Length: 129
Figure (cartoon, rainbow, N blue to C red):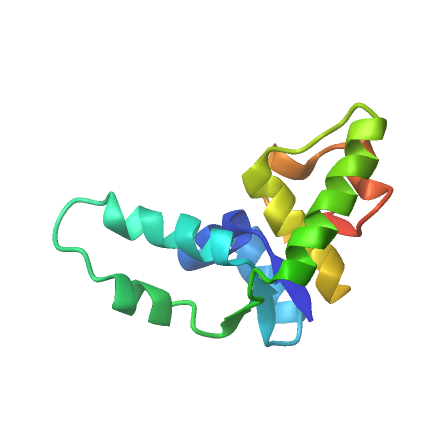
């Protein structure tokens, strides 16, 4: 499985070639963080016209959410401590996403620069598409 950042889900839903090709080459189901679910749905909330959050979530229903549990929170704290000791901490949102990927043992797939840090790549497999 692959752990998706919201940037990949958004790009996929927008039909961007790199995201479509990447996910078509992977095996579903895909995983993501509750933070990413919110970030994708925020696009629906802040769009013009009527808001249909449930329909928007169904649009990426093949992406399963890894719950933000105490174990993931502890993983986030461990990861942030490691990154902080290297002088390369993450913002809380990005940290929760990265911790979910690391806790699940999956590669984190991203399509933006939020996770482009050398320190993070020492502790987690990150693929930028």
